[in-house]
Length: 80
Image (spheres, helix red, strand yellow):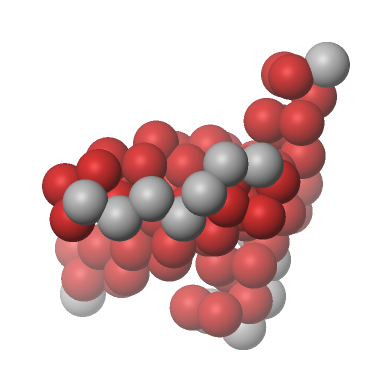
C-alpha cells in the first residue's frame, strides 16, 4: 500500500510541477518520473536546509513538488 501512495504522490507532484514550471503536464509516466526524482531531490534539499515540512500526505506532497520544480528548473537551464 505504501508503494501505491508513493506512486500517487509522485504523479501528483510531477503534474503540479509541470503546471507551475511549464504550463502543462508530461503525461502519466513523465509526471510519475519527475515526481519520484523530485521527491528524492526535495528530501535531500530540505535536509540540507534543516527544514522538515512534516510527515504525512501533505508534507510528502510539498517535498516532492518542490523537488520536482527544482528538477525542472535545472533541466531548463541545461537545455538552454
